[in-house]
Image (cartoon, rainbow, N blue to C red; front, side, top):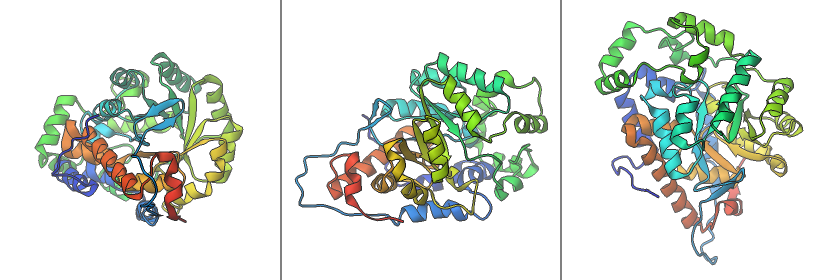
Length: 383
């Protein structure tokens, strides 16, 4: 396992600042921002970092094992790549870069319905060893065809997105013309001209598009028509009937992402799901919501019936350790991997995974935690 990394960027904040310097402002603000006043964006990480760990220095300790069993597969670390929309807008080819790195590092990669690489492309890169996040279509025929394609490439885990029943109100994206429909303003064009490396890479890889959805898009849509098509085609809103219909078709592992309440977690149990990802969409949907780690601590009772995972607010290896200590079975990170890819291009995925593994291993060695399952014994406090 390659744990080498670029020592000029040893911290996630280093990667964030480098990413900011390399990509147009509208792309960085799309990645970096939350919704409304960014309250829950900051709350996510701030409240997670209030979690404290207790070292047990005098225990017998024979070493650290980060490997984690999840849905019948052993991964080499307890974290994966969260789904992110429009990844190719942030850095060209980034879904492929991250999928390749995830495969090499033996951690899960989740492909979003609304990102810029398609199902078949990612399946080829990962030999089918990837997860897929379904942004629920309004039409059953479209949903069924996406599921058919996933079965054909032997995708193992289907993740249903619950927490985008409506688009978040994101002032930066509105100012930058990245609301639906997106528009290219003079200001955006000037920003692109100021980032020639990003512009050349984008030209080389082609204008970002919703690759998975290409078979369903009418030919020759302009940006405004594309926005109208997306609004019409994807409702995003789930209910028990929609989930039950997917459960009937999908015999692999089925996970719901965006759970933040005991009521929704209980419905996931009742509908026969295999797991939940406790998440608030990285603080991008509900500014008045609670932090993901607070939701997680309230949902631990469901661990007897579901695999309980978490994303939102997790940025570093120490943050992964905190989430595991509170009780998460597994964690996912989105922005961290995108900062790294925007900062370092083709090396970004490898770099971020090496950094996270090194950081997590150091925490485990420091507190004398032998394996991931023992993190809860080191918990001092949480919400």
